[in-house]
Image 1 (cartoon, rainbow, N blue to C red):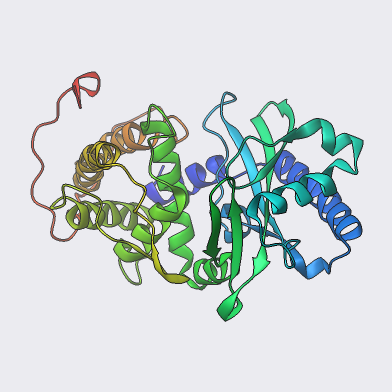
Image 2: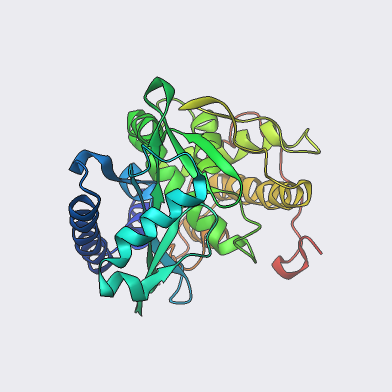
Length: 323
């Protein structure tokens, strides 16, 4: 199996299948209609945000995971108190007996609707209340805290303006993150990962293996010199530092994972046989990456390592890495 075919198969495996896609669409269509009617607002004031409309959503790594969709409703235009905005949103949703029993009001920035698990994992919809502010941006309430400026439509526009390889690489690295992190609360946030990928992605590269390896190498080069998370501006909200809440310990853990990933990807590019390359990509990306087909250990000319990356050192067994 040529590497390009293996990556295409991997990409298909980590994309959301038809059933979750249909479930998201059905749940969203019904929810949007409910909010529009009961809040008496325009359909344009209720919209999806986050990875699903941005084209970077991935399916759960296994059935113990979950998939979700994020949404925003501009229902707080005349409300000054952040907690009152949550109350209004909860009241609107509670007009439906079905939504009332699904409500989770424990989240600091949204109201969550929990649905029954299916074969792909748990499923929920997060709804954020919002009000307009300057420059066409929005403000969202944070419980017991205050208002926070945001620009979800601007970030979506920025994502969709990136080259096609951006979304493919982000999805692959999201799966790598989900396979790597022991605790998703300590893993890198999706928005941070996306901005780092945009910075590190080699211009004009369309080969998945090369794009992935080079992006990992460039990200590692960018972060390795820092002991604390460096500033990373939100491209849709330049005054926001996306790494401000990233703890030093979690940042250091991510750098360790990133260093190892860049090394594995470099070795996969330079592997002397197709089977060796497949094995290394599976080591990096998990079992969703297809194994090398039975019947051979065909030679493959080694590719050059990712630009600027030094020759790799011998690697410890997987269970000995990071202590």
